[in-house]
Amino acid sequence: MRTAIILLAICILAASCNNNQPTTENTNNITFSEQELSIINSEDSVLYVLVVGNKEDSLILRNSSRDFTDEELNSEYVQRLAEKMITTVQDPSQDGVGIAAPQVGLNIRMIAVMRFDKENHPFEAYANPYILRYEGNVVEGPEGCLSVPGYRGVVPRRDTVVMQYFDVQKKENVIDTVAGFSAIIFQHETDHLDGILYTDRAVEVTEKSREQEKK
Image (cartoon, rainbow, N blue to C red; front, side, top):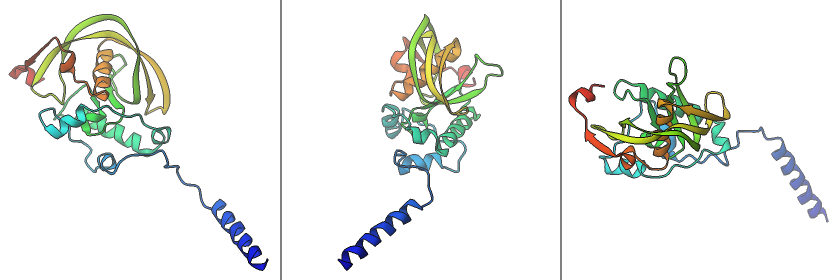
């Protein structure tokens, strides 16, 4: 009997101690791998951009990307990755108008897009982006890609899309109708998240001229 009372007291004390533990961020659904964290937490503000000519890079570029969990969306890692992607795409060595996470080695659904449809053409980062609807007309226009250097193609795209995404800056889910060149960029970058390159959709692909390489 005495032993039973002692064991009961120990159990009550243990439960009490656990209840008094300070709360910490729930990481049960934060599933970044060590490799992913090494990229996100890299001291380099400009990240390495993968290219299709490299076999290991191509495996990542051709893979489908997973969604961020709700816990990940509210962690500091998402904002950190967004900042690095925007810095990378704007760097003179790249000078692009959009970039997707697979292009920096991460098969996670995040893109950064230059919003030509907004004042001052800001770069904005979006997590878990999906195209809800294609609208408008099909137009054929020139496209290039940071991961396919030296080439340019003509690609048919819709000129309007309805997007759903998590706005990293505002930290809220958004449904956004995007038209014009920004709509083309959204389609190009979300393709990356499904392992699709613009060359898969192009009606024509040619090598860049020296003049085009300077642009």
